[in-house]
Each structure stands twice: as C-alpha cells, then as structure tokens.
Image 1 (cartoon, rainbow, N blue to C red):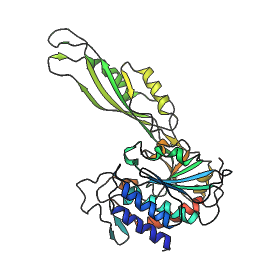
Image 2 (image 1 turned 90 degrees about the vertical axis):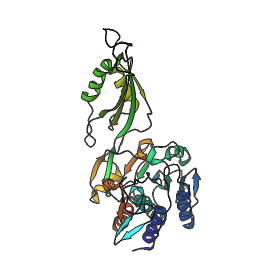
Image 3 (image 1 turned 45 degrees about the horizontal axis):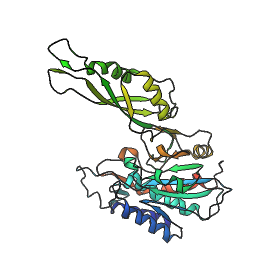
Length: 353
C-alpha cells in the first residue's frame, strides 16, 4: 500500500474517533485542516467548511472541485460496536461515518494530493463541507461564492465507484384545505377533510409528462395529515404534507407552479434549495468513466449536489446501502481502489468552462 493510501486510512480512523454530528463538525474540520496544511496546501476555512486549491489559480483554466462532507448522522441505539471507536477486523473498518462519507472524503483527499503533484489542464480545488446530512445552510452552499466559478464538481458519496449521472431533488410541501365549522349532528359546515380528498387523490395519481431515463417519474407522496379538534365538530382546516422527489427535467420552482395550478388547497413549499441534477453521458468525465468500465445510474438519494449550480458527478467508494445503518463499515480495499480510480478518472481530463 502506498504511503498516501496509508495516510488516508489513518485520517479516516481519526475522523471516526472524532464525533462530527451535523453542526458539531469543528474538531473533524480541525483534522482535515491539519492534514492538508501538513501537505503544504494553503487552507481556507469558513465555519466548519474547509477548502484549498492545489496551487495558484489560473484564470485561463476551468476549475474542478472535489467535494465530500465531514458530518455524520446521529448513531442509533442498535450499534453493537462503539460508533466512535474505529474497529478493524481484517479488511473491514467499522465506525460511524466510515462509509458515509468518510471513505469518499479521505479517498478524494488522497486523490487531490496525487493529482496536485503535476500540472493539470484545470484548477484543482478540494472542499470538505459541513451539514450535508441535514442540508444545512451553513454547509457547502455557504461557501460556494468563496470558491469562485466552478465548471465541474466531483461529489464524493458511497456509490460503489459507479457514476451517479442523475440525482433526484427534494421539495416538501405544506398544504391546507379550508372548510367551515359546524355541528356534526346537523347538516352544517363544510368539512375541510372532504375538501382535501380530491387534492390528496391528485397527488397520489398524477403523473407529470417528463420522465427520466435514470430517475423515472416525479414521485409525490402524502406523508402526514392533521385535522379536527373533537368528534362532533366539522373541521374547518385540514393540513397535510407532501414529499416530492423531483427528476432532472424539472426545477423545484417550475414543478411548484405546475402543482399550485392543479390543486384547490393552499400550497406552501418549505424550500426550493434541493434541486435535481444531471450530467450528460457525452460529458468528458462520464465518457472517460465509461472507457474505464464504470457503470452509471440515477441516484434516488439527495446530496450536496442539490445546492450546486454547476455540472456535477456523484461517485465514491463504499455502498449507499450501509449509510445511516448500525455498525456502518467500509472495506479498506474499497478506499485503495477508490483513490486509484479517482486519479484515473481525473488525471489530465479536458473539459470546457
């Protein structure tokens, strides 16, 4: 094993041993800063987000961003290991954040170091971001202006080193159907629950015309409902929420307008921030990945891609099926192979601004 691979695995063990729940990533950020400074990079920090360029930025070149996150979810009580003790059994490393997204994070750091050893046809930028697991506003979105113009982003998430060429966006809607109070024993009032039913059925059955080759149709699911105060009062308000998973053919704003025109109830989006994304199969990075034998797919899970307004590709070692599970783990071989593949994928890559 090369020295940089050993160092990357050593860094991952330290990160596992350093609690870094969302909004509490300060000590994990310290570790990343220290690692990069020891490699000679000029490291910047804002909150718990850390970034650096491989050298002096050349304004005539496009910029390639390598990004992954340092925060983790809260461990469940189903862990049989201490989630904050890195446990190595053979090739298997168990610990909170080992897979999501520790393995992609340290693999990208190692690839950043290796790629920086020679001049690339692009400005090479690395960023470790906070609050990804909660889509927090103090995460990567808070530093995008500081990073400058970016032409291509590689987002490190556990995909088994398969290329996620599309990713679903997320929009949560709060809906209110209105009625009029009355006594349930008499023919009084307008029942807000009954007023809501046609809209709920619309959310259940409607299909938007643009379907994705990789993500399928837009998916809308009513996931909660509240109405009524007591058994003998006709309710005048019925509130329900809808989880909307958006494919790359629609922006959240565009889809909201289409929904709002189609239902009777009042509809309020909680946020437009988490948009869908997609990259062309003709993009140079995807074409090189295909040449290297990497499969591609559409990802149903949301990542920091959702707040990036430039072309991105999600790819990384580990397996998404292990994310947010008790006794989360990664294989060291996955990290070693991930580092090698990142370098093969990106070394000398030519792409436009």
